[in-house]
Every structure is written in structure tokens, then in C-alpha cells.
Length: 413
Ligand code: C6P
Image 1 (tube, rainbow, N blue to C red):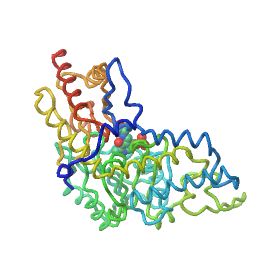
Image 2: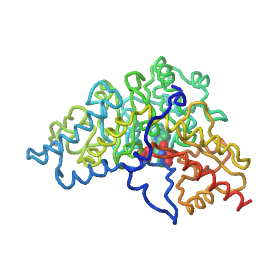
Image 3: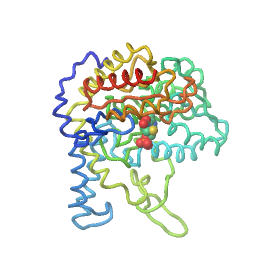
Image 4: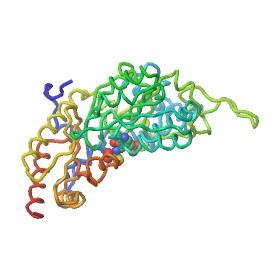
């Protein structure tokens, strides 16, 4: 979908009022929050859901028969249903609550990997993966004697699809790639990746950390086997997330952690495991945050993902227009299809210095390798400055970023 073809009709100033954190001064200047790929801000309704839960409903779930326990359980399970609808899963028990994308990937690498990988098998990832989608696979490869293969990425930050197809073989058991890159913003052709991987008999895991709040998708249409989401990157609380998995796969996979709630019956001789999704949700979960996530889903649904994407695409296009006229700035990540993330460097100036000087002007950006060190190595850099947007950002904030950068360049050069 060409998001620039759609004009956003959202009333951004009205939306901004729902985010109390935006209404503050940082270092004497109004906050300009452009670090949304790290975590985005929370609307009042999400904050209210958290406090309401603790003020009125706090109880452990799936265990008690008293009123509070029933209320908490119902609210927790409501989020599971909302998430099922949000991503288009066929069955509600395909939604497993985790701590976030990192835990979701570790769960699959550990559980699926331990059960189904053997020496000589291959796992394919791409050259633009976050460390969370590299290290869990390295761990299981080491344990099982499997091999990790990497799809090359070109100079503008797109994967080499032909090279990917050449890597596929009957040895390929898992393909794990991101839907959108956190450092470059590239949207990967995951539908095509999934179809090709399936032809080789591999299962596919999609790291959706940078997509869930920005891109419209449906896991059944994509036909991915696993899809991973972090709540805090989609206006929800930290410390919770989702693993979507196809029911038939999750049913075959052994538990990831043992403990309360994931069992049917325990004796010292033998334990039988609970049905999905509980088999993968050992112990008391992050009840309050899961419940508040429901409000984040409703917030996105009410605005409409396509409207959000259209507004963010305008911000990205405006950023590229502004920054590309500044001769000292080199943009990193200029793929054709992108989410609203723009990395850049300024020749001869360390990215940390730029970040600090922008912070002095109230502008929050991320600097560093963004947990994608192999990708930075490929570009021959240590890190970048990264501006990333959410629905509440404005063109005036992009102007402030550009103006701040102009002054920094004048001061330092
Ligand atoms: N990226 C960023 O600033 P967790 O921490 O589990 O919620 O998400 C990990 C993760 C996995 N994959 C991708 C593509 C990501 O972007 C992230 C988190 C943040 O870019 C923090 S490093």
C-alpha cells in the first residue's frame, strides 16, 4: 500500500491532548519526543486502566472464584480476544502473553528449537535483525549444532531476495525476519519471504516489534507461523507482549517454562501440561499491563491504522525532504518501503554528541547501534542518530529537529 497516496484526516492536536507526558518542558524547552521506535508514549486511557485495575480489581487470575478474581480474569481474557481480532488470528488460544518480543522469540527458539532442530539444520535470519532476533537463534544453534545463515542487505537497506532464495534448501528449518527494521525503517516483503520459506518446508517467525502500531496486517493472510509483538511499542504498557503461533505448532511444542497454571496435573512421578494458551503462561502473569493493553488496542483501532500510517508517512517524507537538503547529513536507510524511522549520521561528529545537544533543546532521539551491531558493521559505522515517529508527532517537531541539527552543525564545524 502506498501510504503517501492516502491523506491523513486525523486531528493531531486533539490526539496530543490524550498524552499527558507530551505536555512538559525538558531542559527549558517543550518536549519533542522522537524516540518512538524505542518505546512510544501512553494515552491517558491506558494509564487510567492501570490505576483502575489496582484501585478496584487487583486479584490473581484463573485461580480464585471470588468477584475480584473473576473481574481480573475477565479483563485479562478480554485483551486476548482483542489481540486476536487486532492481528486476525484464527483461534484465541493462539495468543500467548509474554514479556515482549524478546521473550516471544526466545520462547520459540527454545521450545520449537529444542524439540525440532538437529545437527546440520539451518536457520535463516536477515542482516538487519535486532539482537533479539539474532542471539536466541545463536544459542539454540550452539546447543543443537545447527547453522545460522544471513540474508544480505544492500546499501539502501533492503534485503537481497534472490540471495535469500539461494539460501533456502531442505536443510532450512526456520526463517526469522523482522516485519520492519528498527534502525533503517525498511518494511520487508514478509508475505513473499513466508511463501518462499514454506515451499522449502521451513517455519517462519516474524519480529513485529516495529510494525504492530504502524502497519496493517493479518496473520492468517500472511500465513506466518509465529508473529511477535511488544505492547510498549504500540501505546501499551512495558513488560508485556504477545507471541502469536499457529495452533497446530504450539500444540506440538513443549512448554518453555514450568510452574503454576501451565499444568493439568502434577505428581512427583509425572506432570501433564495445560491446554493452550496456558501451557506457555507459567506463573502469575503481568495482569495489570495486559489489561491496560486492551485500551492501547482500542486507541489504535479507533484512529484506524491506515490513518496512523498515512500521517506517519507524511512525517517521514517531510523529514527526508528537510534532512536531505543539509549537505553534512547522510541518511542511513533509504529503502522504498519504510515505516516512519529515519537514521542519519553527520560526518566527523559523534552520534552521542548530537543526541546530547538535541536533548539540551528538548528533543529526544535515540543514538547508538540500536541493538543492530552487525548492520552497523556492514555500513562501516558505530551507530546513528535515529528519529522515529508516532501518531502524535507533527511537522512542526520535524522543523525543530532540522533547526536543532542546523545549529549543531554550525556550532561544531
Ligand atoms: N527495539 C529500539 O530502540 P523488546 O525490547 O523485547 O520490547 O523488543 C526488542 C526488539 C526486537 N525487535 C525489534 C525490531 C526491535 O526494534 C526491538 C526493540 C528498541 O529500536 C529497543 S533496542
